[in-house]
Length: 404
Ligand code: MLT
Picture 1 (cartoon, rainbow, N blue to C red):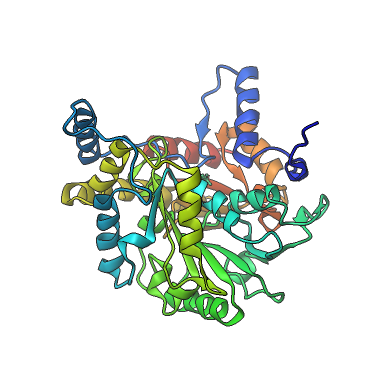
Picture 2 (picture 1 turned 30 degrees about the vertical axis):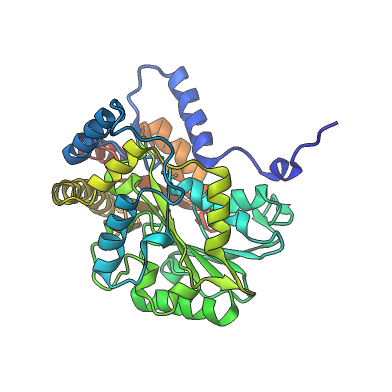
């Protein structure tokens, strides 16, 4: 008889955003007349920029004639897109990354989840706490995390690096030595950022202990301050220890379009094996590439018009972030983030747990956010609001929260 992967059974509850979705749907069913303001999942709301729509239309037309039709995409992604990425995301920032070190995919979430496959099961992972749940959950599925402590909400074989107001949401180097370190900057969920000097410390540490950093830079377009790196490859030595994962979801509104990429420098090797070769093997075997049409849309993100239009889109969301951040502060809340990232991270009030605060806001203000504890035990007592909604919704949410 067949057997299942029992590691899946170890996962407590459902995926965080599915749980929120279910709770919201249950509330809506009970109160169909209530108008909910959704600031939970970090999903974009602004339409695709005109330059992207134009590229999509053009690419669709190309698919309709034999001369310009495209079938399977090349393994790593189309060169036109990888060249645009290298030029704009890396060379423009002084990073030494080549086009054949880029693997185009259908999004950062899949890459964040799948990348662990190329590492041995007995590697020890270190994560920030709170953290984007995909990193931990996919390692649980792979059987890499040991046993779950339901009281502490931690896994025995995971190194947690607490990020709280006390350490300004910047993790200390871990006491136990990890093999794989997950870092996400600008940070989801805390909305914090890291300076180049602080990131250099991580790169030096990883190179010293022989660890690999999986660097999730999905929110880099939201950086507004100087000396905050847009890529880990701005740090010296990062080619030898870091994989970087990028998304088109947040900078260009591709959450429903799907496009991302992973950078694996060819210097990254252990005992003579290049991680690039392993990921290329995995990519070739399990993946047939993001559609031509979508990669063409991705190319338009780097056109002069695309850049200009997307700058405005990012500014729109960051204006929401500033509005919510300052409004909550004014109303007496303890608030973090929202300067280099589209997330507001706030303390709950009256010692409410994160989930109690979720219910409180849902029932009394009809505002939906994300409970901090859903991202890890150190997120307990915090709450996340996304700035990816409309400005009108941000205004409405704040009005309702102020009235509580
Ligand atoms: C979030 O809300 O944390 C993000 O939308 C999740 C994601 O990008 O997959």
